[in-house]
Image (cartoon, rainbow, N blue to C red; front, side, top):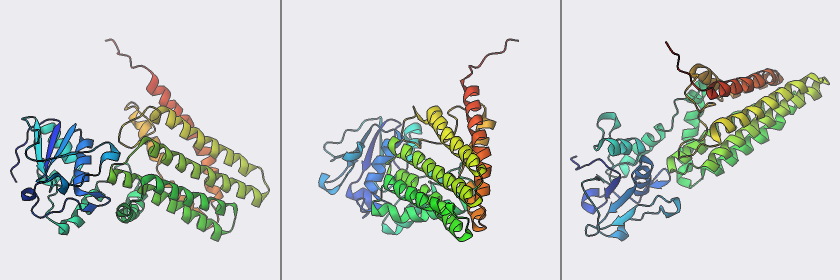
Length: 359
Protein backbone atom coordinates (compact mmCIF):
# COMPACT_ATOMS: atom_id res chain seq x y z
CA UNK A 1 0.00 0.00 0.00
CA UNK A 2 1.54 3.32 -1.10
CA UNK A 3 0.45 6.36 0.88
CA UNK A 4 1.60 9.94 0.44
CA UNK A 5 2.55 11.01 3.94
CA UNK A 6 4.20 14.14 5.27
CA UNK A 7 5.09 14.60 8.91
CA UNK A 8 2.87 17.04 10.85
CA UNK A 9 -0.10 17.51 13.15
CA UNK A 10 -3.01 17.33 10.68
CA UNK A 11 -4.55 14.07 9.49
CA UNK A 12 -6.97 13.22 6.70
CA UNK A 13 -8.73 9.87 6.94
CA UNK A 14 -9.80 8.71 3.50
CA UNK A 15 -13.27 7.17 3.94
CA UNK A 16 -14.37 7.39 0.32
CA UNK A 17 -16.01 4.32 -1.15
CA UNK A 18 -13.05 3.54 -3.40
CA UNK A 19 -10.69 3.55 -0.40
CA UNK A 20 -12.88 1.33 1.79
CA UNK A 21 -13.25 -1.65 -0.51
CA UNK A 22 -16.65 -2.54 0.92
CA UNK A 23 -15.66 -2.09 4.60
CA UNK A 24 -18.36 -0.49 6.78
CA UNK A 25 -16.44 1.88 9.06
CA UNK A 26 -19.56 2.49 11.16
CA UNK A 27 -19.42 -1.05 12.53
CA UNK A 28 -18.18 -1.40 16.12
CA UNK A 29 -15.15 -3.18 17.52
CA UNK A 30 -15.02 -3.41 21.32
CA UNK A 31 -17.36 -0.52 21.97
CA UNK A 32 -16.29 1.96 19.28
CA UNK A 33 -17.04 2.23 15.59
CA UNK A 34 -14.00 1.86 13.36
CA UNK A 35 -14.10 5.52 12.33
CA UNK A 36 -14.57 6.71 15.94
CA UNK A 37 -11.63 4.58 17.07
CA UNK A 38 -9.39 5.92 14.32
CA UNK A 39 -10.25 9.55 15.08
CA UNK A 40 -9.87 9.15 18.85
CA UNK A 41 -6.56 7.32 18.48
CA UNK A 42 -5.30 10.07 16.15
CA UNK A 43 -6.26 12.73 18.69
CA UNK A 44 -4.56 10.76 21.46
CA UNK A 45 -1.45 10.44 19.28
CA UNK A 46 -1.25 14.23 19.07
CA UNK A 47 -2.91 15.14 15.78
CA UNK A 48 -4.52 18.54 16.31
CA UNK A 49 -6.81 18.42 13.30
CA UNK A 50 -8.55 15.33 11.92
CA UNK A 51 -10.72 15.33 8.79
CA UNK A 52 -12.71 12.41 7.42
CA UNK A 53 -12.81 12.53 3.64
CA UNK A 54 -16.09 11.06 2.32
CA UNK A 55 -18.08 10.91 -0.91
CA UNK A 56 -21.08 12.13 1.04
CA UNK A 57 -20.85 13.54 4.59
CA UNK A 58 -24.05 11.70 5.58
CA UNK A 59 -22.29 8.37 4.92
CA UNK A 60 -19.86 8.92 7.80
CA UNK A 61 -21.51 8.72 11.22
CA UNK A 62 -18.95 10.27 13.55
CA UNK A 63 -20.30 10.42 17.12
CA UNK A 64 -17.44 12.00 19.01
CA UNK A 65 -18.82 15.40 19.99
CA UNK A 66 -19.44 14.46 23.63
CA UNK A 67 -15.78 13.44 24.02
CA UNK A 68 -14.42 16.73 22.64
CA UNK A 69 -12.37 14.75 20.15
CA UNK A 70 -14.54 15.01 17.05
CA UNK A 71 -13.28 14.63 13.56
CA UNK A 72 -14.72 16.84 10.82
CA UNK A 73 -16.40 15.03 7.95
CA UNK A 74 -15.59 16.70 4.63
CA UNK A 75 -15.97 16.04 0.92
CA UNK A 76 -13.31 16.28 -1.78
CA UNK A 77 -14.38 19.83 -2.56
CA UNK A 78 -14.00 21.09 1.03
CA UNK A 79 -10.96 19.14 2.23
CA UNK A 80 -8.15 21.26 3.64
CA UNK A 81 -4.85 19.59 2.80
CA UNK A 82 -1.30 20.81 2.52
CA UNK A 83 2.24 19.48 2.51
CA UNK A 84 2.00 19.22 6.29
CA UNK A 85 -1.00 16.89 6.25
CA UNK A 86 -0.84 13.10 6.63
CA UNK A 87 -3.34 10.99 4.70
CA UNK A 88 -4.34 7.45 5.67
CA UNK A 89 -7.15 5.14 4.54
CA UNK A 90 -10.03 4.46 6.93
CA UNK A 91 -9.28 0.74 6.57
CA UNK A 92 -6.53 0.96 9.19
CA UNK A 93 -7.35 -0.07 12.76
CA UNK A 94 -7.01 3.01 14.93
CA UNK A 95 -4.23 2.58 17.51
CA UNK A 96 -2.07 5.18 19.20
CA UNK A 97 1.38 3.55 18.65
CA UNK A 98 1.39 3.58 14.85
CA UNK A 99 -0.35 6.95 14.70
CA UNK A 100 2.26 8.42 17.05
CA UNK A 101 4.98 6.99 14.82
CA UNK A 102 3.25 8.51 11.80
CA UNK A 103 3.09 11.94 13.41
CA UNK A 104 6.70 11.85 14.57
CA UNK A 105 8.37 10.15 11.60
CA UNK A 106 6.08 11.14 8.76
CA UNK A 107 5.61 7.55 7.60
CA UNK A 108 3.83 4.39 8.61
CA UNK A 109 5.78 1.80 10.61
CA UNK A 110 6.50 -1.54 8.97
CA UNK A 111 6.84 -5.06 10.28
CA UNK A 112 5.12 -6.08 13.54
CA UNK A 113 4.36 -2.43 14.39
CA UNK A 114 2.50 -1.78 11.13
CA UNK A 115 -1.21 -0.91 11.44
CA UNK A 116 -3.72 -3.68 10.90
CA UNK A 117 -5.56 -3.33 7.59
CA UNK A 118 -9.25 -4.29 7.77
CA UNK A 119 -11.07 -5.55 4.70
CA UNK A 120 -14.31 -6.74 6.28
CA UNK A 121 -15.95 -8.27 9.36
CA UNK A 122 -13.80 -11.36 8.97
CA UNK A 123 -10.91 -9.24 10.26
CA UNK A 124 -12.73 -8.01 13.36
CA UNK A 125 -11.64 -10.96 15.50
CA UNK A 126 -8.00 -10.17 14.74
CA UNK A 127 -8.68 -6.51 15.51
CA UNK A 128 -10.17 -7.42 18.89
CA UNK A 129 -7.23 -9.66 19.73
CA UNK A 130 -4.74 -6.95 18.83
CA UNK A 131 -6.54 -4.25 20.82
CA UNK A 132 -6.80 -6.50 23.87
CA UNK A 133 -3.15 -7.55 23.67
CA UNK A 134 -2.15 -3.88 24.01
CA UNK A 135 -3.83 -3.76 27.44
CA UNK A 136 -1.35 -6.05 29.17
CA UNK A 137 0.92 -4.01 31.43
CA UNK A 138 4.62 -4.60 31.93
CA UNK A 139 4.08 -3.80 35.62
CA UNK A 140 1.63 -6.67 36.15
CA UNK A 141 2.75 -9.09 38.86
CA UNK A 142 3.22 -12.81 38.19
CA UNK A 143 -0.30 -13.84 39.26
CA UNK A 144 -1.82 -10.87 37.46
CA UNK A 145 -0.13 -11.87 34.20
CA UNK A 146 -0.88 -15.58 34.50
CA UNK A 147 -4.31 -15.54 36.13
CA UNK A 148 -6.06 -12.19 36.60
CA UNK A 149 -5.27 -10.46 33.29
CA UNK A 150 -6.52 -13.30 31.03
CA UNK A 151 -9.82 -13.34 32.95
CA UNK A 152 -10.25 -9.56 32.99
CA UNK A 153 -9.53 -9.40 29.24
CA UNK A 154 -12.12 -12.14 28.66
CA UNK A 155 -14.66 -10.03 30.58
CA UNK A 156 -13.69 -6.74 28.93
CA UNK A 157 -14.08 -8.29 25.47
CA UNK A 158 -17.73 -8.93 26.32
CA UNK A 159 -18.45 -5.81 28.40
CA UNK A 160 -17.11 -3.22 25.94
CA UNK A 161 -19.77 -3.87 23.23
CA UNK A 162 -22.46 -3.60 25.95
CA UNK A 163 -21.54 0.01 26.71
CA UNK A 164 -20.48 -0.67 30.30
CA UNK A 165 -18.47 2.35 31.45
CA UNK A 166 -15.20 2.16 33.41
CA UNK A 167 -16.73 3.89 36.44
CA UNK A 168 -19.66 1.46 36.46
CA UNK A 169 -17.16 -1.40 36.47
CA UNK A 170 -15.18 0.21 39.30
CA UNK A 171 -18.38 0.44 41.36
CA UNK A 172 -19.27 -3.21 40.71
CA UNK A 173 -15.83 -4.54 41.67
CA UNK A 174 -15.83 -2.33 44.78
CA UNK A 175 -19.14 -3.89 45.84
CA UNK A 176 -17.72 -7.38 45.30
CA UNK A 177 -14.82 -6.58 47.64
CA UNK A 178 -17.04 -4.96 50.28
CA UNK A 179 -19.44 -7.92 50.26
CA UNK A 180 -16.49 -10.25 50.83
CA UNK A 181 -15.08 -8.34 53.82
CA UNK A 182 -17.60 -9.47 56.51
CA UNK A 183 -16.84 -13.15 55.80
CA UNK A 184 -13.48 -12.62 57.52
CA UNK A 185 -15.28 -11.95 60.82
CA UNK A 186 -15.69 -15.72 61.12
CA UNK A 187 -13.00 -18.24 62.00
CA UNK A 188 -14.79 -20.90 59.93
CA UNK A 189 -12.62 -21.91 56.94
CA UNK A 190 -15.69 -22.07 54.69
CA UNK A 191 -16.69 -18.47 55.45
CA UNK A 192 -13.12 -17.26 55.15
CA UNK A 193 -12.69 -19.10 51.84
CA UNK A 194 -15.82 -17.37 50.49
CA UNK A 195 -14.40 -14.03 51.63
CA UNK A 196 -11.07 -14.85 50.03
CA UNK A 197 -12.74 -15.87 46.79
CA UNK A 198 -14.69 -12.59 46.67
CA UNK A 199 -11.48 -10.69 47.45
CA UNK A 200 -9.80 -12.38 44.48
CA UNK A 201 -12.86 -11.68 42.30
CA UNK A 202 -12.61 -8.01 43.31
CA UNK A 203 -8.96 -7.93 42.25
CA UNK A 204 -9.61 -9.65 38.92
CA UNK A 205 -12.58 -7.47 37.93
CA UNK A 206 -10.70 -4.38 39.06
CA UNK A 207 -8.57 -4.75 35.95
CA UNK A 208 -11.62 -4.34 33.72
CA UNK A 209 -12.26 -0.67 34.47
CA UNK A 210 -8.85 0.39 33.22
CA UNK A 211 -9.11 -1.92 30.24
CA UNK A 212 -12.49 -0.49 29.26
CA UNK A 213 -11.19 3.05 29.69
CA UNK A 214 -8.21 2.41 27.44
CA UNK A 215 -10.28 0.53 24.86
CA UNK A 216 -12.81 3.37 24.52
CA UNK A 217 -10.45 6.32 25.19
CA UNK A 218 -12.53 7.37 28.20
CA UNK A 219 -9.74 7.65 30.80
CA UNK A 220 -10.41 10.46 33.25
CA UNK A 221 -8.91 11.90 36.41
CA UNK A 222 -12.12 11.16 38.30
CA UNK A 223 -12.07 7.55 37.11
CA UNK A 224 -8.47 7.11 38.24
CA UNK A 225 -9.19 8.60 41.66
CA UNK A 226 -12.38 6.54 42.03
CA UNK A 227 -10.47 3.36 41.20
CA UNK A 228 -7.62 4.20 43.60
CA UNK A 229 -9.97 5.16 46.45
CA UNK A 230 -12.27 2.14 45.99
CA UNK A 231 -9.32 -0.29 46.05
CA UNK A 232 -8.04 1.16 49.30
CA UNK A 233 -11.54 1.21 50.81
CA UNK A 234 -11.90 -2.51 50.11
CA UNK A 235 -8.47 -3.22 51.63
CA UNK A 236 -9.31 -1.22 54.77
CA UNK A 237 -12.63 -3.06 55.21
CA UNK A 238 -11.06 -6.50 54.63
CA UNK A 239 -8.15 -5.88 57.04
CA UNK A 240 -10.51 -4.36 59.60
CA UNK A 241 -12.84 -7.37 59.47
CA UNK A 242 -9.90 -9.77 59.73
CA UNK A 243 -8.61 -8.04 62.86
CA UNK A 244 -12.04 -7.68 64.49
CA UNK A 245 -12.96 -11.30 63.76
CA UNK A 246 -9.65 -12.46 65.23
CA UNK A 247 -10.31 -10.33 68.32
CA UNK A 248 -13.82 -11.78 68.75
CA UNK A 249 -12.66 -15.37 68.35
CA UNK A 250 -9.71 -15.09 70.74
CA UNK A 251 -10.92 -12.46 73.20
CA UNK A 252 -7.43 -10.95 73.04
CA UNK A 253 -6.68 -7.25 72.36
CA UNK A 254 -3.57 -8.06 70.30
CA UNK A 255 -5.45 -8.57 67.02
CA UNK A 256 -6.76 -5.01 67.30
CA UNK A 257 -3.21 -3.68 67.49
CA UNK A 258 -2.30 -5.55 64.32
CA UNK A 259 -5.50 -4.28 62.71
CA UNK A 260 -4.67 -0.72 63.71
CA UNK A 261 -1.21 -1.05 62.17
CA UNK A 262 -2.72 -2.43 58.96
CA UNK A 263 -5.28 0.37 58.72
CA UNK A 264 -2.84 3.16 59.54
CA UNK A 265 -0.29 1.78 57.09
CA UNK A 266 -2.86 1.30 54.31
CA UNK A 267 -4.60 4.65 54.70
CA UNK A 268 -1.33 6.49 55.29
CA UNK A 269 0.33 4.93 52.25
CA UNK A 270 -2.68 5.73 50.05
CA UNK A 271 -2.67 9.34 51.25
CA UNK A 272 1.09 9.66 50.75
CA UNK A 273 1.02 8.18 47.25
CA UNK A 274 -1.88 10.44 46.29
CA UNK A 275 -0.16 13.55 47.64
CA UNK A 276 3.25 12.75 46.20
CA UNK A 277 2.43 11.30 42.77
CA UNK A 278 -1.25 11.73 41.88
CA UNK A 279 -2.32 15.12 43.22
CA UNK A 280 -0.99 17.21 40.35
CA UNK A 281 -0.90 14.55 37.68
CA UNK A 282 -2.95 15.19 34.58
CA UNK A 283 -3.23 13.82 31.09
CA UNK A 284 -4.91 10.86 29.45
CA UNK A 285 -2.73 8.09 30.87
CA UNK A 286 -3.32 6.07 34.04
CA UNK A 287 -3.37 8.19 37.20
CA UNK A 288 -1.51 5.72 39.40
CA UNK A 289 1.56 4.03 37.94
CA UNK A 290 4.17 4.14 40.70
CA UNK A 291 4.73 5.15 44.32
CA UNK A 292 7.25 7.69 43.06
CA UNK A 293 6.90 10.49 40.54
CA UNK A 294 10.68 10.70 40.14
CA UNK A 295 13.19 8.52 38.32
CA UNK A 296 15.66 8.97 41.18
CA UNK A 297 16.27 6.12 43.64
CA UNK A 298 15.02 3.55 41.14
CA UNK A 299 15.96 0.53 43.24
CA UNK A 300 13.87 1.60 46.26
CA UNK A 301 11.04 2.78 44.03
CA UNK A 302 10.92 -0.55 42.16
CA UNK A 303 10.92 -2.51 45.40
CA UNK A 304 7.96 -0.50 46.72
CA UNK A 305 6.12 -0.81 43.41
CA UNK A 306 6.57 -4.59 43.50
CA UNK A 307 5.25 -4.72 47.07
CA UNK A 308 2.19 -2.67 46.10
CA UNK A 309 1.08 -5.12 43.40
CA UNK A 310 -2.04 -7.20 43.98
CA UNK A 311 -0.43 -10.62 44.12
CA UNK A 312 -0.78 -10.56 47.92
CA UNK A 313 -4.51 -11.17 47.47
CA UNK A 314 -3.84 -14.77 46.41
CA UNK A 315 -1.93 -15.34 49.65
CA UNK A 316 -5.03 -14.12 51.52
CA UNK A 317 -7.14 -16.71 49.71
CA UNK A 318 -4.64 -19.50 50.41
CA UNK A 319 -4.65 -18.68 54.13
CA UNK A 320 -8.43 -18.25 54.21
CA UNK A 321 -9.02 -21.76 52.84
CA UNK A 322 -7.50 -23.08 56.08
CA UNK A 323 -9.24 -20.50 58.27
CA UNK A 324 -5.95 -18.72 58.93
CA UNK A 325 -6.58 -15.34 57.30
CA UNK A 326 -5.79 -13.62 60.62
CA UNK A 327 -2.10 -14.33 60.07
CA UNK A 328 -2.22 -12.11 57.00
CA UNK A 329 -3.53 -9.15 58.98
CA UNK A 330 -0.76 -9.81 61.50
CA UNK A 331 1.83 -9.53 58.72
CA UNK A 332 0.09 -6.49 57.26
CA UNK A 333 -0.09 -4.86 60.69
CA UNK A 334 3.71 -4.88 60.72
CA UNK A 335 4.44 -4.53 57.01
CA UNK A 336 2.02 -1.72 56.08
CA UNK A 337 3.51 0.85 58.51
CA UNK A 338 7.01 -0.10 57.29
CA UNK A 339 5.82 0.41 53.70
CA UNK A 340 4.47 3.85 54.67
CA UNK A 341 7.78 4.81 56.27
CA UNK A 342 9.68 3.71 53.14
CA UNK A 343 7.35 5.75 50.90
CA UNK A 344 8.07 8.80 53.04
CA UNK A 345 11.82 8.08 52.97
CA UNK A 346 11.66 7.80 49.18
CA UNK A 347 9.80 11.11 48.96
CA UNK A 348 12.41 12.82 51.15
CA UNK A 349 15.24 11.43 49.03
CA UNK A 350 13.58 12.58 45.84
CA UNK A 351 12.96 16.04 47.30
CA UNK A 352 16.67 16.63 47.99
CA UNK A 353 18.23 18.83 45.33
CA UNK A 354 20.94 17.12 43.36
CA UNK A 355 24.39 18.52 44.04
CA UNK A 356 27.23 18.47 41.59
CA UNK A 357 30.41 17.14 43.11
CA UNK A 358 33.40 19.35 42.39
CA UNK A 359 36.60 17.54 41.41
